[in-house]
Image (tube, rainbow, N blue to C red; front, side, top):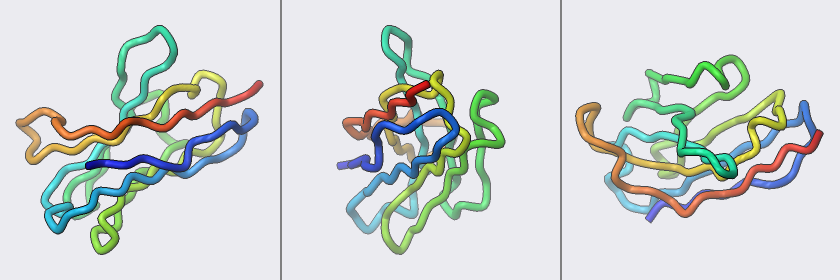
Amino acid sequence: QLVESGGGVVQTGGSLRLSCAAPGRTFSTYIMGWFRQAPGKELRFVSRISRSGDSTVYADSVKGRFTISRDNAKNTVYLQMNSLKPEDTAVYYCAARRTDLTPFDSWGLGTQVTISS
């Protein structure tokens, strides 16, 4: 149901923009988030955005470098990633949840992001 795209291989200091398409007319009713999983490590929270897009939260490790946004007319959430570091290498997953009190229960299959040093 959620489809990520935009991953790839970039050099340290480069940028990528990830997209997550969420077909369906109820997209605007979901809180959206991005998570990542590096090789051999657990899944980690990256960022989330409110239904209207007016509230965002970031992990400390990406604050100031990543920007989450959404376009409810296009049923799409984005993750703009700048000043990329080798430690940003991971599979990035898009996720959705209905409220702040419920877990993220809809997930995409992920997109690989590799940062070369």
